[in-house]
Image (cartoon, rainbow, N blue to C red):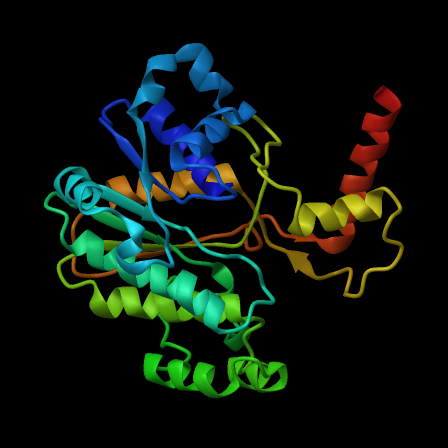
Length: 311
């Protein structure tokens, strides 16, 4: 969802961009070019097709895979990226929250490590935007997540040793997480630390979004690439499929529309400038517009009923 909106916004609003390279892996027998065509068939890109159709030629797929050696990128493509890329937006990750430790470590942590190494070779790099998550550190902080860097949950050697010994042991994994809610947030926290420690000359910013939801505004309100997570939970309640949901109704859900996240990433990349420091930007709503579960269920149900009556 993030990448679709990011690419649409970059192509539509950032007129000075010459090319946008997108790392795409083969999937289900479809080549990167075929997946790109499917990608652009999404209604999200209708504004571009109607108003600026030629700009879509600036979007260039690059065959690759976060899990592969050297990101699965050919030498020729790597040289092109090294010569031409000036800003890297890295947010690719597996977001399954029940994976065993080795999966997010290979994809989320390992993919970040490889992308950073490639970025170090880029001749004209102005910014590396690392998209993390607001939940990477929240389990350990009673006063909320600050826009600061936090210590890693473990060393890389310790994690590798744990995977060798206990990767399939759910009980030991829960103990090892030490308060973090899942292996996804654990690997994200470790990836943040790795980027900061190993960035060398690369200018880096970290963006930590909360629970990313559908667009609120542009390019089209209410768009989402999937029907998972919180929207699915609310829909099930509104439709009467789920009659009981464990939890406290006064707890706040930290929604953040995906177009807000993308806007922040683009602006932060443009305005932060080259520095040895690593600016951190939390992208959340609870401190300025807190929405509780009870409010969310109420509004969502009312909307479903209203739309049903209007048909």
